[in-house]
Image (cartoon, rainbow, N blue to C red; front, side, top):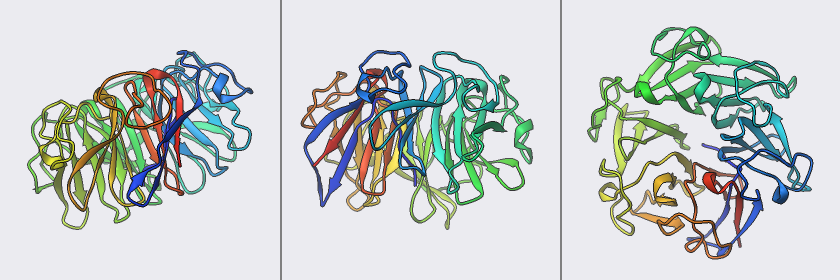
Length: 359
């Protein structure tokens, strides 16, 4: 199951069939800068939070796209710190986490042992932070070289072209959205071998019910794995959402007509328009939640009814206000993630903040 994201984030608490109705800001001043380490999260600069997750220590972590770091918010005193990277400095350097360099990190995922995987887009790599040693290493990609090569060989010798999203696929698997190559690729974490598992490299429509093998994916942007092991694939350029049914090995159309826009709430999700979605999470009820980035909203696809609805925002960009989630405007949100208690974290990226929706 996909995990959280932060920086400019919202926590949404689900209960029964609906949402509680109070949003409050919990991190970020709105300034696009990485600052404030050691102090209160509400007084810290948070520079474009993207993907989020909760660590084994219960803290909230997020990839800070603008600051080229991974930040941590302490669950007890709500102070913020830099977990990895050097704030406001970009580059490509492995080693000790506090000296490592990143370049536009997008998503983060903790494994069961607490190791953190990062899709570091402009270095063309997937990086890993060891939970015990806090050492950063590269697990996929050559580094600062884009292209497509290396399938069925070592992932560290393969080329990627904007590896933008990463998700754990069972205890020993890693799935990567290789977006400009229009493929989903998998790394076996035991052998280190990479291969293409979905997409052909072509920018063409994806037919409903098509076999995964030989079927194109137009701009796979983000992934989630549901409780049954099926993979939710969100297409940015394709403006649609699909489920990779692992038993049948087919791609099932769930949402989006393939044309960018913001429409269809209250109706069949397959007939709705979605606009540049860049984050996805599976809710405690099994529903699918999207950061519908270019419509400035968070939307839910209800699996039982097939209906889509907006749960945060109104389709217009803005910054709040705190309170009613339907009236709380967002600005290009990128990350969404549920914790074990059903709270939903939202990286409200261009507002450079974190908010929380509670009962």
